[in-house]
Length: 231
Image (tube, rainbow, N blue to C red; front, side, top):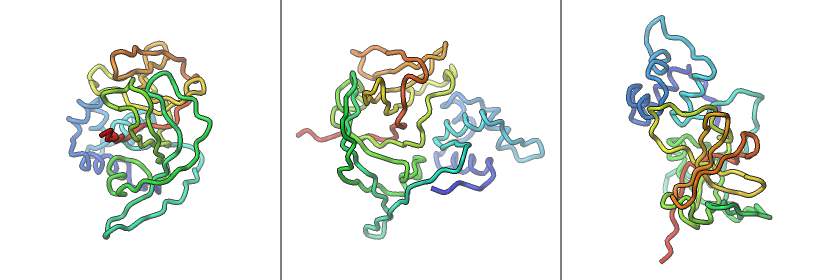
C-alpha cells in the first residue's frame, strides 16, 4: 500500500465517510476529544496541522496506520481476479496463537493462502502486504475467539497502546497477537497507570495478567477472526 499524499484533513474526512461516522460520533466512540477532530477538519484559516501525538490518536481511532521513520520496504502483493472481483492472497502460517497460557511454536512454515477482497481489506485499513493468518488455540478469549479460529493479523500495527484510554471510551481493548516470554498468545492489551500492560481475556475464568512494557513482543493487531465449523 503506497503512502497517502493527500492533506491530513482530507484523509480524516474520507475515512470518517467510509466508516459512516462524523466527528461527534467518532469522538464519543474513541475517547479522542471532539475538539481534536474539529481543529483538523474545520474549513477556515484556523485549521491547523495536528501535533504528532494528536495525529497518532486520530489515526488509531479511525483504524489508520500512523508511521514516521525510515522508508519501509513492502513485499509485493499478488492479485487474483475471480469473476471480475479483485482478491489478494494472504499467507497462512503453521503457528498457533494460544488463547490461554501460551503456545510454544517451533515452526512458522507457510502452509498456504486464503484470498480476501482487496476492497474489504482497504475498508478495515489493512495492507495485504502486512497481513498474515494463523490459528488460535485455547478458550481464554471465548466467546469472542474460539479454539481453532482463523485470525487475520496486521503486522504493521505492532505497537503497544501509548496511554490509558479516555473515560468515555467504552469499547473493548484491541486484540493483539503477541510473544510473551517466547510463547505465542492472543490477548486484549491495555495500558494501565504506572506504565504496565494488562493482558486481558474475554473468558471470565481467566483473570488479567500484567507485564512491564518491553517484556512483551507484539506481532500485530488482530483485525478479523473466523469461527471454525466443528460439525
